[in-house]
Image 1 (spheres, rainbow, N blue to C red):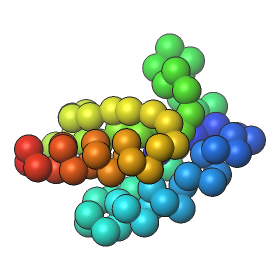
Image 2 (cartoon, helix red, strand yellow):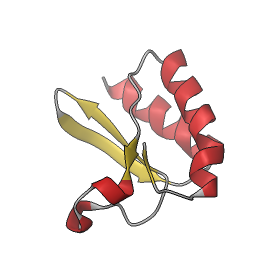
Image 3 (tube, helix red, strand yellow):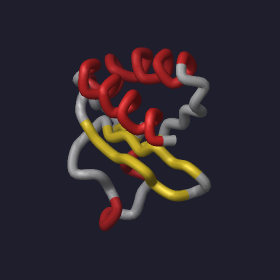
Image 4 (cartoon, one colour):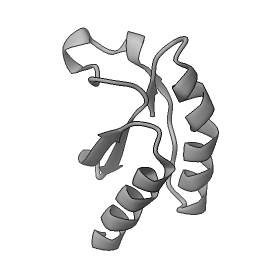
Length: 79
């Protein structure tokens, strides 16, 4: 999860994202957007990346629990 300092939606959504990652036995990391080079910062926060073998296989942003679950379900089904 990429979040930004002072981002209230990020703070509120993080527990849900951590819980769902744990339920799917996925590792979960938090990165501060301010620590990323500006040219690769996501367009909005929170932003999520799913990796497999050090490659990004899916990315999305926002605080919709429905979207989060659907992206996980769709992506994990392919693996």
